[in-house]
Length: 186
Ligand SMILES: CC(C)(COP(=O)(O)OP(=O)(O)OC[C@H]1O[C@@H](n2cnc3c(N)ncnc32)[C@H](O)[C@@H]1OP(=O)(O)O)[C@@H](O)C(=O)NCCC(=O)NCCS
Image (cartoon, rainbow, N blue to C red; front, side, top):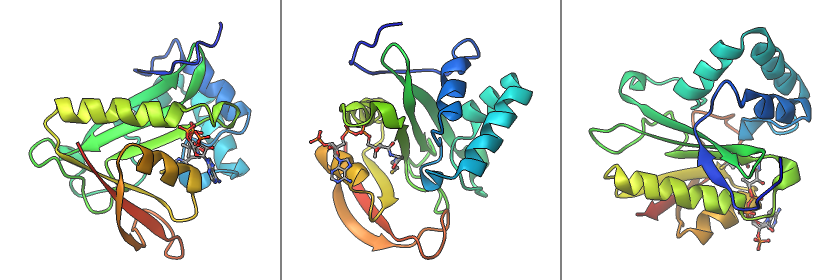
């Protein structure tokens, strides 16, 4: 299939799971906290291959890495970034009644672009698409977190209007990992 270089967000399906599988096989980590963690990526690949439908269900229902008491109320919109091929993932999560995310969930948004498609504006486009969706759901503000040293991510968040308001730890990650907290007005 040809690359279009105009990425869109698509809903993950079993038919297209092969693209996600190939990305894992090439070493892509779906969890931004575990980039370069070969054991984690291999375990994900094994889990996908042993139960493809179950793995898809996990992607669709629970992309947020942390557990939360408010889990039952949390809505996840899980997408794949697609340019004719699998290019990454982007998720929006929130509690409909409040528009907030539970304290132990690392922000409203998660995104990751496969390394071989980075630097083409895909994360920026995906984040803008999630913002549009969030607006349509009545959300007024997004809180987005990234590792303090993750310059690519910080550039993307600031490019869509993100304003930093805090630096600190987050319960979803190791205590030594400092996070930049951003607020994006919708
Ligand atoms: C961060 C990430 C999502 C960016 O995806 P991307 O599709 O490459 O992002 P974009 O192309 O939209 O924009 C990235 C910008 O940051 C720049 N950039 C990337 N890494 C950089 C770095 N280390 N230092 C400075 N600038 C950097 C790029 O050059 C680009 O700017 P440009 O358009 O002026 O060239 C991607 O690198 C990724 O998936 N990383 C691993 C997972 C992750 O960190 N997810 C985010 C969690 S919050």
